[in-house]
Length: 205
Image 1 (spheres, rainbow, N blue to C red):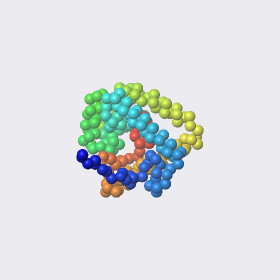
Image 2: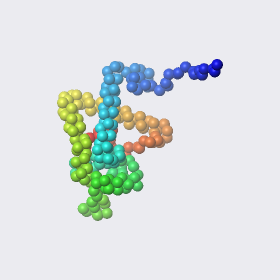
Image 3: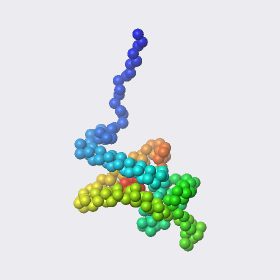
Image 4: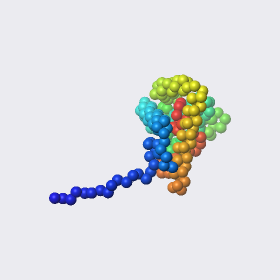
């Protein structure tokens, strides 16, 4: 008879469990706090699914979608965007930006114009077709999101803003701590090059 393999007893994970509410100091969060974080996780999952649908609708990748939405946001504020601006916003190289712009020009999502004063500077705009596709993919979602925000009382809005700001700060601090621990930016993580937009993810158009 062959001997049965034996394994040592499983030792508890040395890392604190975030989703069970155990903090770094060993304390356990309240049920209410865990419920809030579970709701936040559900929101993040729904947001990811929404982005996936939008990418499929526009037939673009994640970076392309972020670029298109950024152009639309800046156009709404009447703020022109140059390739250099887009490179900074996306946190990618100039070469990668050039490839992205060529790709989105071919697909009809962007158009380029020379600056009215300095012809050496190129400005980028989302095309009417891109506006229409984004509106079709995300317009209804954004309307429902704004309606949900409008339903909040002023005190509730302040509490939500305070909480989401604290969560964004906590996530940024974790990224910074990880980078410092490893002596630089973690692998696969692009260091932020500017301000953040609505809770991580270039959120609403």
